[in-house]
Length: 438
Figure 1 (tube, rainbow, N blue to C red):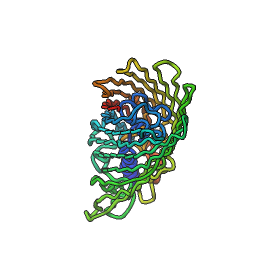
Figure 2 (figure 1 turned 90 degrees about the horizontal axis):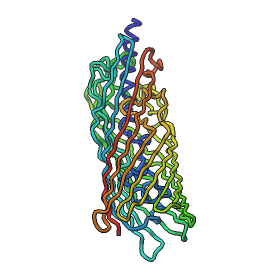
Figure 3 (figure 1 turned 180 degrees about the horizontal axis):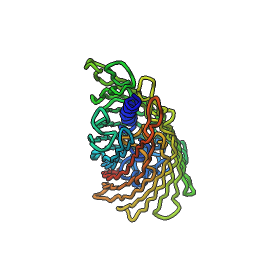
Figure 4 (figure 1 turned 90 degrees about the vertical axis):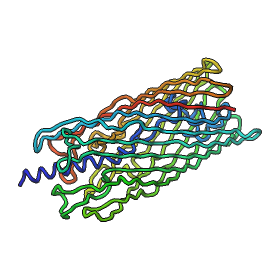
């Protein structure tokens, strides 16, 4: 009897573990689940833009007031090809020693961006609009015969799939108060699509109504749902006479409609699943230095408030077996970037960014499919004119490999003895862009 109960507990832990991680898996990107930059120019400087407006995409993303500091009007297109390398390793000691490692067949995620900025002639107003992918990722773990979490039911969970895409549109107004100070405002309009299999945010289907005996199966949320969200950004920008510039911005929490998924219960009847998932508030401050000929140096510091955002709540199981949240901490981000103008036709850039890991080691079990644990990023890039006022922008960015490891979790007994889960992730991105200045 004790062996049977432990086997059922282990089975439920495997189910719950994979399901708990699914929420974060759909959202994994770079700085937690927030992209650390937008477009080839901004990404090549590690996302630095709060006080160093080099291009329209970066300025619109990080400080609505800084678009007054751009040297010209511009229209800009970009595409980031994000290539993640994600692996899951797990082990259990009961009912028999077993361990394995599996790579996610995630493929390449394409993240588009568009930006336009226009300085109204003989006016203190500057207008802009940005449309970009803020977050987008998919995870696809195949069924495994050796990795305990991914073995076929009833002992494991089988394959795991998820996909998330988020687009943000930001019409922007900036007003230059005097020769130094500018303020800006941008309403944010967001659209997101989410698909998850299984839907661990909901209570599992239980054929016999006896929770905890190992026959529970979480329903699928693979029929993708779309939701709209809204928020705003405000910013201030100071252009100094002594080669020092400063900027600050605050982007409110982006509040989304409830995601609703058409699913089925244990008897095959219709069941609707619901998930509240918002985008965190972000506060940024930055400085830039222009004191060396042809050089620009920038520093940005950000605060991303995951802890107070719906969907990122404490990583615990609710009494009905559903997952309460994936338990991310709020994090600090430090980004450094530099640009050197080789000529009027060529500029080269580099950058480095560091951020706290939003996922505590103890919550490794709640962030299995795509753990969003990368902390160090390095980037480089260049811009080259291919015609009068036409520029090709190219960047490469690498997210250095990081791993976390912790025990499996169980909704009633806590950590499962003799178990472990290790998440490992790194990323590479190629970013291409085309820019017209006028």
